[in-house]
Amino acid sequence: AATLAGAGFVPVLAETDHSVLPASDGQQRPNIVLIVADDHGTDALGCYGNPLIKTPALDRLAADGVRFESAFCTSASCSPSRSVILTGMHNHSTGQYGLQHEHHHFSTFDNIRSLPHYLAAAGYRTGRIGKFHVAPESVYHFNEVFYDGAANDSESLARSPVEMAERCRQFIRNDRQPFFLYFCVDDPHRGVPYNIGAKPNKFGNKDSGYPGITPVSYSPADVIVPPFLPDIIEVRKELAEYYQAVSRLDQGVGRLIDELKGAGQYDNTLIIYLSDNGIAFPGAKTTLYESGMRVPCLVHLPGGLQRGTVSDAMISWCDVTPTILDFAAAVPKEHSFQGRSFRDVLEGRTTSAWDEVYASHTFHAVTMYYPMRVVRGKRYKLIWNLAYQQPFPMANDLYTALAWQGIMKSKQPAIGKRSVDAFLHRPEFELYDLDQDPLEVSNLADDAKHRAIFTEYRDKIRTFQKSTKDPWREVEL
Image 1 (cartoon, one colour):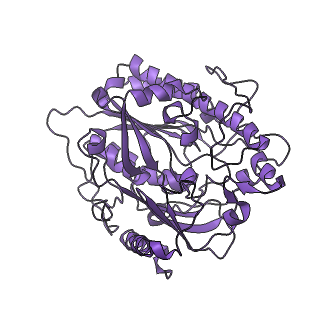
Image 2 (cartoon, rainbow, N blue to C red):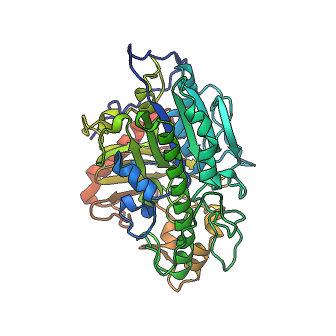
Image 3 (cartoon, rainbow, N blue to C red):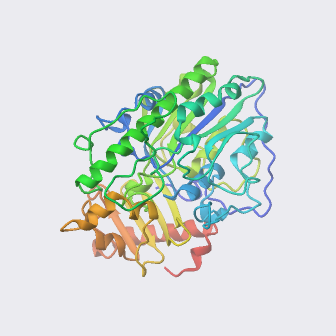
């Protein structure tokens, strides 16, 4: 297994030198497009094995680059995850402990620097469009904002991804200097309002449609229910709406790529597609089970390198900022990143020592305090539930969902193979053998045969907390 030092964990520096290393003489630096979907799991992508879902643009992107089988968010919640993507640091190190908007009001520390800051300092034009959901703006400042989407706004342009792509046209066509475009759709997040009732959530789908979008509808009878969910009609109805939202975002990605090609920029652009966390269904989003933290990651490399490659290297969203800065020749001389660049993996030079990731979740909504720390290796995974004495709190959009209501009305309420009671009342430690138990239902934490692996992984979490200056590290293990 990779050591923490090898994985790039370093103490947060008191004073960081934000100067950057210059590009090599004559080096053409790539444009960078980072596409972040909202609540998109690996369950609903053709290139990840779903034969029903229509995602031709994303499937082409995978065929034209690298698809990661083991990519993980570090917090299955929107704002914390996005802060990690843009800083290369776990949210417990930056103060973005939970959701940013409204009364939740979590915010990143003022002294943190983010990806757009580093790239702007290196001579990149920086622009963003769509969902933002982090704060303060000074930490995450972009030179240009084409649409400043509010979190979960039902009328947001971020539900209209073809329009989003078209608004970026002039930015993409201006070739005076390399650009960084942060392209964040609201799909396939659940739509607001979250009303309890007999109807499925619409996931942003509406009868009037969206400009440039050809709606792709699905029958509840046809959708593929992932094994971490129960196969009941309420789940199927909501999955059908979720699929439609995924197909809409796919069309937006397709239009964005068309814009890049039309501007002659595609071949010199690093494109990364990922999701902030897993699907917004019970048992996935806001949890650090596999369904919540294992998410899509597709990467198109400048020059068309590594086409059609599938990687089993284990990467996390802490690694995104260091990787982008590596490609941009903009790595700070000194930094506090807790991730590391996976450029060598992308370019096929190595996959060794990419066999472990760490995760840290503390809040979703301000009322949803349930801190978890996780180490996930190739085979085993340990979840430490710091506040295990209390019931697991349900997110509002999941509690009011038709799927959850259907589960609770069942004769034997269950989330996949896990009982609802086991889902809501968790032990302090959960140790899983993912080879034998991919759905994470057989807890081995108290199994004498697994005492050595439990102790090893518990000590890894201790080291992780110390290395990242986790405020929760004082809790006794």
